[in-house]
Image (cartoon, rainbow, N blue to C red; front, top):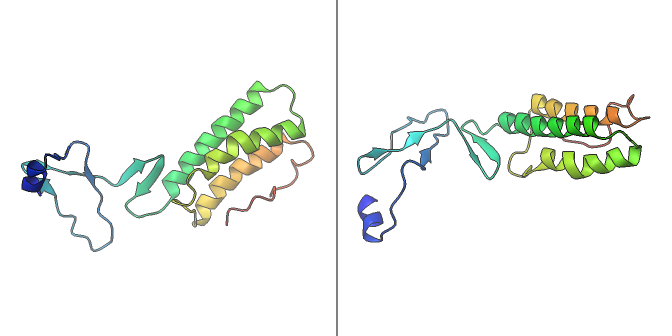
Length: 142
């Protein structure tokens, strides 16, 4: 591979390249290109999506929930007039995209991950008067 990359003048940057080992019976072999070893990682972020070696989406769910909670906090602190329509529009345009970003790549399937995201929705529901008693706003993450 090294000679091919040198012949075609397509050199690899081993500092930016990483190896992630998948599977339970994986022997986790070290990969070397020339005299440089690729670093092994347990999780890597690409295009804003965290890929874990176990392929579970818990880290991504926690990251999405933290970002959405931060925006909800900003909305609560910033807006004095908290009309139902305004809060609903802010939720749809600012909070929900953070929860649903690249959801096709990291579909949550564990109950604990679903609960983390539903807590964000419950917090948003409390901002809308008249809906604070409801637990489910109609958004379904299953």
